[in-house]
Length: 116
Image: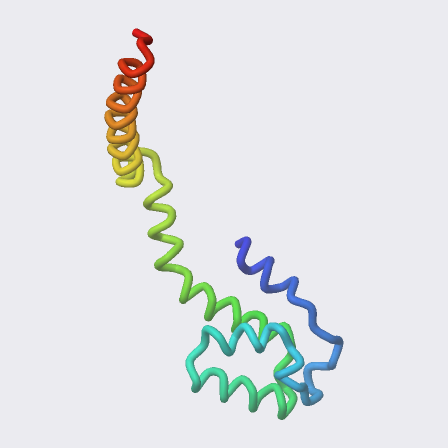
């Protein structure tokens, strides 16, 4: 998926998996902190600092967290963007309302300027 590709492209250093890492120096971890539960954040921080968790593992976790958070939003977006969706109905109703108002204004302007 596009989201997975974006997460995989987050820059990280080449610290070996078994070496301890500094989570706060990682953009991926900082993003995780914004979306994950406190328990996941604490556990991930401990695993990174202890060594044994690689940046790739962190990125996989980040993708899972983001995907879980964005899934319902993505489904709603897809439903709105589908042909003949409720969004099309709302836009059509708005366009008709705008046309009606524009007709009134244009008729007033035509009468005021003597243009028929």
